[in-house]
Length: 520
Image (cartoon, rainbow, N blue to C red; front, side, top):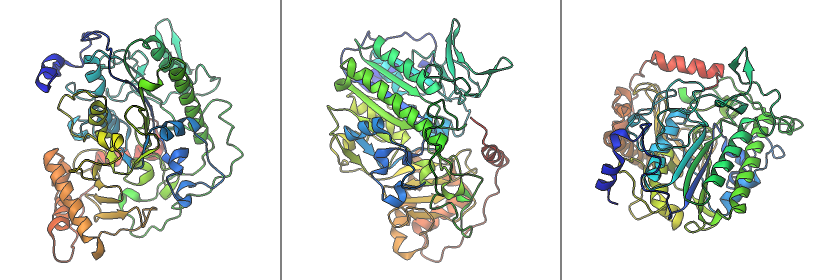
């Protein structure tokens, strides 16, 4: 099927309608299954296979003896591929998720911050596979249908036909089935709540969603399926069911290396905020996730589906967990923006493959659809990185750069061009920053004005300018950012900073909410 035929069949203006047929071409009989296990706010250093890629001072951020083991996630990496530089295109829930499912940049979905409805004309990877005859489904947190909370089974399915256990928003700790469908089990005054009291291996959300995943796999084992389970942990609140709740209480956690960093010269996006570094409950959530990954893998093995199933473990964004004296996400620092991405596909990916080029969540759709041997809808703005996984090297014209942006409108936040080694970040309120992750993995030093890095700054500035024009990112036209990019790309004399833009009220309000730690 060529792109023109695909557009006719899929009806792009109506791909998300409720009345769309379940299968456009009957049950698919060829092509691999696709299973995505997706977590929320997951610090990559809590995963064993990621610690193995780091130096000891970076791997053991909370102490050499204070770690959580993740053998099941590690198995996926050791038998497939691991991306060392996979970034959230925007390191906040909704924008990252929209980029992941659509292959488009946040400003074009147009989910640039949390709780914005994704555009009806977005074509997701699930819709593409549904049109190919795949059974499709989704369970867990969606966060792409506005402010509804929990809002079970959104009417706009975006290709995920079995979405009864999809909820729009919230980090609920207990779920249950009822005659009227799933609901939040923990209740206070008849209203859903976040309590973990009484949670067990059936009702705790991570376990509940793993059960739904296993049920879907068993139901569709005779055909081809695409399923995404979105676990709302290890996002706060930092609570988990027994025995995970006390499993790591005896551990002593050290301050992260950057916890007491100096205040001088710190850009607005990296300033200290309230944030501790206790990891006991966070580790418990991670361990519970890994154990359930093991249950899902066992189901695939038992049904003899492993050889023809692509298994992916990833997350929407990271969590600083005390690094840089901060919690949560939303900034270009590594523990916020970098997320785990491991993939198992035995017929295409050699076991133990390491991908070191910078990729973003926006690259997922074109990569996975091409790797599966199908054509995309032609709307994607990310890159097809399938050759990196299948051949272990980039195609000839490949540029090692991905673009990462903060939340909000054009003047609200920062914008960056990231490579496997460098981060070049421009902001309406700060001088540009260039981080060299090889020389300064703690991200404390700005190399922007260092003459030895002038060519790096020039190249990445030109990449950002080209990106802004091609993908209509108004942030590159903000007066201060535009002036900084112009000097960075072409300037010959001394850099003279322009006046910083005033922080928009909406962005400041969102910042205050994050400081309060309100669950999204």
